[in-house]
Length: 178
Image 1 (cartoon, one colour):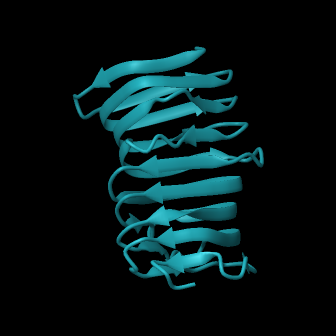
Image 2 (tube, rainbow, N blue to C red):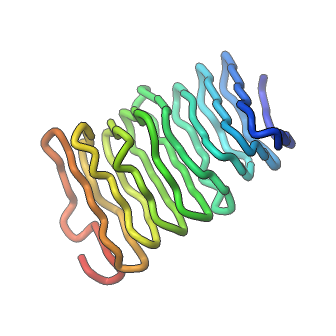
């Protein structure tokens, strides 16, 4: 499958897409239940707006879910070990679940809080933004570096890491605090 979009499933069930090449996401993708995208190639965003209860899957070459108007309830159970970036944007609070294994940079951007205490994040780097705080407090996290993160509301950003953590000085901001 070269492209996926213009798809609606409001049954609350699971939608699973397995692909053996790069996948272009386009148009509206509305899945009230869980959306799982597994591809052996890159997931490329061409303006797709994803409205899903849960988004999970895997890619090889990075994944771009960065449309600002996405409405993703939970992101997790996602793997990309190619060293390429994985970006998620959400126009609401974002929950994290399962193991998120991204050897490149994981970018998480939400207009609400990011709650990820139950998720295990394994990432080369973690950055992004929230409004209402961010909780990355799972003791099993393995994050190479953390920075370029802002919480625009001034709420707490909590990070626990189970390995040496690099941070770029002055690169974590809580609404004006560095």
